[in-house]
Every structure is written in C-alpha cells, then in structure tokens.
Length: 178
Image (cartoon, rainbow, N blue to C red; front, top):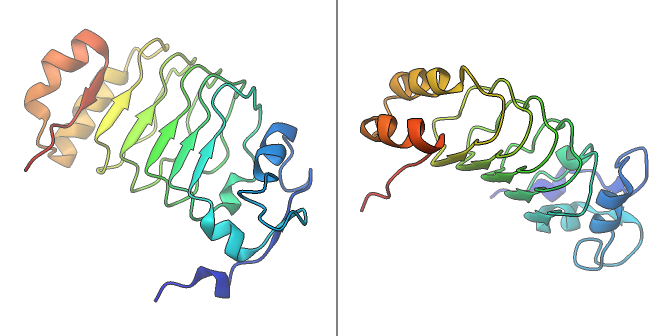
C-alpha cells in the first residue's frame, strides 16, 4: 500500500522551512503538530489534508510543498502576492481576495479553483480535472480565449455552456453527470 511515512522526512516548524509566522502558527496547533514538539513528523504530515488560512493575513505560503497530503487549501482574503509550488494532491484551492499577479503550475488533480479578486493578467494551463473555476474581478483580458481553447483541446463535456457562463460571469462549473 501507500505508506509515505516510510520515506517522508520530518519538517521543523521554523522560519527557514515556513517563513510566514501566520502559517507557522497555524501548523503548530495541537491538531497538526499533535505532540507539540515543533516538528511535523511524517505521520503528522500525512494527516494534514486541509489548511484553513482564510482571512488570516498570511503573506507567504512557502513550505506548503512539504504538506504532501494536502488536498484542500483555503488562503482567501489574505496578503498573498505569489504562490510557491503547490502540493501535487491538491484538489481544492481558494486564493480569492489576494494580490496575486500570476498562479504557479496547477496540480493535475485540481477540481476547484477560486482566484476571484486578484491582479491576475494571465492564467496557467487548467488541468483537465477542473470542475469549478471562479476568476472574476481580475485583469484577465485574454483569459476567456485561453479557457475556450483549453476546453476545446481537452474536449470537456461542458463546451456548450461556454458562451452563456463565461461571457456573463467569467466562471464555469461542470454539471454533475449521473
């Protein structure tokens, strides 16, 4: 089976690994650093699947790449101006209401992305897995064309919704199929 704790290394909760004090404090709580030793053990790391930093004024997410089990990251309405490489298992990302001018490469399994209210002028390639995207209130002039082309290339089933949804609210959601 999948036992990452066999090869994962422990990560010290210090400024070298996690420069932002807000992020360090969040990861130091008793639900993440279970034994409160200031070190995230491999067992503790694989238990961290969700990180809630919404409205915490975090400025730097450097270090989240250590959190390999992270699937849901909410860092909306904070002070982020850039993002580090994102954990590969991330399926939900909320970075609405920040100061981002670009996004890093998005994980292959990402299903939900909210990047409303930033300063984005471009978007990275959207993974085929994306189901919901919110990107209103940005500086995206070429975005609609990029999304349209990427949707055609990936042959997603919701192309028919393109005109209605994208030109009205600049976001889309794939209908659930039974």
